[in-house]
Length: 255
Image (cartoon, rainbow, N blue to C red; front, side, top):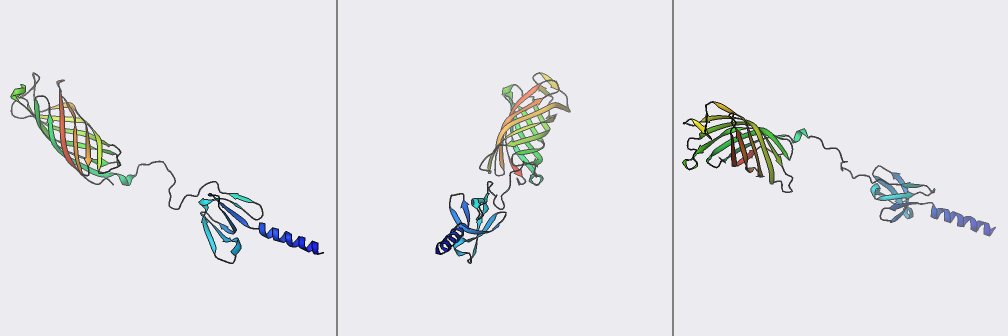
């Protein structure tokens, strides 16, 4: 009889030792516990050796699996994202990021034999951190010199062009290099004398078929500097190839 009672006590002791939940962490640590609740982000439990004591919580993302007292096993394969973490989504155009911007530029336009001042204003929108589109207009002039043999070449130009500026990615957002491209029409007017260019006389008013600008520059905070190439295509099939350098200022916010 005594042997039978000892066997029952031993069996009860073994059952009590095994009737606990084991929480296995991802770092291989084990917690002997009584699991109370498995929530969306946390697991609530009591320590096995102090079940009358306080309840504890552990982040579900830190748990590899739970081995329950009844022998079942619950494995957590996916890490639960932290609260506030955003799941990856496809990039969409953020309407709120579109901002009105304006550029005011002054500089110099020149050829081998002519040179003159230029001033233009560009109104448009910064679609995001890297793209600006707008409309550009203003005035510039080319004056010939006796040394170049084009002393009679004095003209004023009034461009109307679509302007694009693409900004290169940069860690320092205060300094942003960009590429500029503009294309549109160009209205000409002579200054005083009749206009002759490469032996061809031009009557006024006249308009070029198109005008093209392409250049590289940088934006430092609100200040800008651009250097590039400009092409005037005249209606009598003469082309004027120019270089230009200009500095300016940006008006408007980026975000």
